[in-house]
Structure formats: C-alpha cells, structure tokens
Image (cartoon, rainbow, N blue to C red; front, side, top):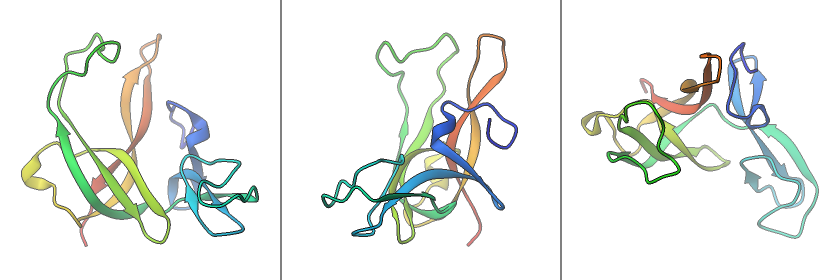
Length: 140
C-alpha cells in the first residue's frame, strides 16, 4: 500500500513528504537514473546503484491517446475507454513512460508541466480499487 491505497506493485513506489513518488535508482559511478529501480547500471558496468525517489513533477515529452481496444490478453471485462499515454521527462533524471489522466488531445501539449498521481487501474477480486501511476497536467 502506498498513501493508504493498493497498487499494481508496491516496489514501483515510495512515499515522500510531498506524496507518492516512483522508486528509481541512480548509478553511484556514472549518475544514470533508472526506473524501475535496478541493481546494475544500463549505461556503464557499475553495480553501485542507490535507490532514489524520482521527481514527482516533469514535462510531457510526447504523447498519444490509445483509442482502440488492445489485443488479447490485454482486454478486460469492463467496457474499454480510451486513455492517454506519454513519455514524461523528469528533470535531471530520465524519461518515463506513463499513463496520462487527460484523454482529450486538445488538452495535451508537448512541454506541458505534469505531476505524478495514483489513479485507479482495475478492481481486485474483492471489488477494491488497485492503483497505478499516471501524470496529470498542472499549472505552470
């Protein structure tokens, strides 16, 4: 649980004074960041990875709207609703692929400031919501 909510994978998140953040890692040798957290560096042969909370804010680097039902096995029982997906640049860290809360293309813009939120993804077998991460636009 993160911030009192069930998540798709608690290993993806950490709690900070400002709210939930993505749990990443930084190479102590070359400074490269990764998400999710990893034990080895993808940029250099370093294995001195330090777990770090990633920035909760960034800018939308690029985006699209998933407007059609994904092919099986990714279809669910609920009616399909289009959703936004994009790459978010976390300043000084990395690009992370994520869902976007906004689905209206007229309201999405490359370079817009965004902030991490937890959003319902599905219900568990008992009907309780399970959350994933997404980014929502914020005022500059």
